[in-house]
Figure 1 (cartoon, rainbow, N blue to C red):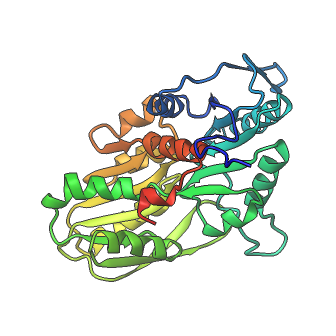
Figure 2: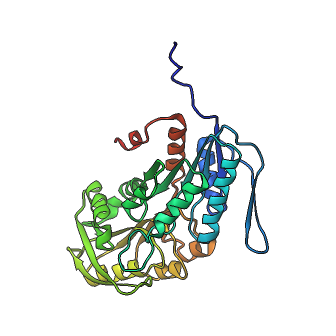
Figure 3: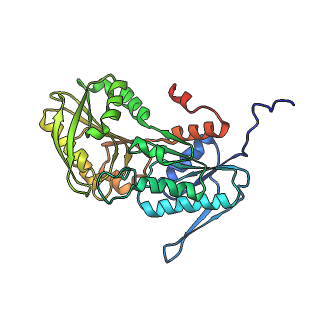
Length: 329
């Protein structure tokens, strides 16, 4: 029996669908892949129920649904689940949920009695809706990968942030040091420091109660007369990072740069960051920032796009090629 030709694909062509959570990023991914976004109609009824209708068949196709699950979280999450189920019922050959920012990432363990592990519930719902694979960026905790039974590509945008710092900012920095915003981010912070060949310092922070507020206490390491790069995975209200900025400034830091992947910036987060004594914010478009938020941060923020990264991983997944090769792994 002759061998199958090595270019033979198990699935049909790529079909890209965009949820309403991240339309600009979805379009950039489509442009990178030189593929159109497939037509889909999403209607919200007066009772807030959502209805999804595909404008063309996906039978036998390799389908990618791009939907970030930042604000409005529950609308975006439900829309993702309904779109996946719609594609499953239309006999798509394979469905991949591309989720640049995965919600509920902080509810990843039972760290006190009588609480849920909501990140696990979200993973279960994505599988139950009919996803065959998933793709996401910088989840809050590594163990979230273990909540999925389906295969996935858990990616990091850190190299985009590092490249920008090395190419655009490094030459003007004085004696730079990386500061991890808390001990929970210490391991990833150490990776940033190692990749940029810089020393690292840590902020020891103790959280009190279940609200979003935390109290930053001590700085472990030396920042005096040095430029500081504060790193984190996501910034929500900006409370922790504001405390971090104040702590390093009190300890004699020079210019302060904020580097994080997911810019959630809930409530007055953008205004809070704008009021801080910082030089520059470097983040990504994994979660869209409204024009109002961008206006607050004008001149202080650089938003790098993850479209090329996600687009290339989609291409490789479709062609059955290694994703690790992109990162020399």
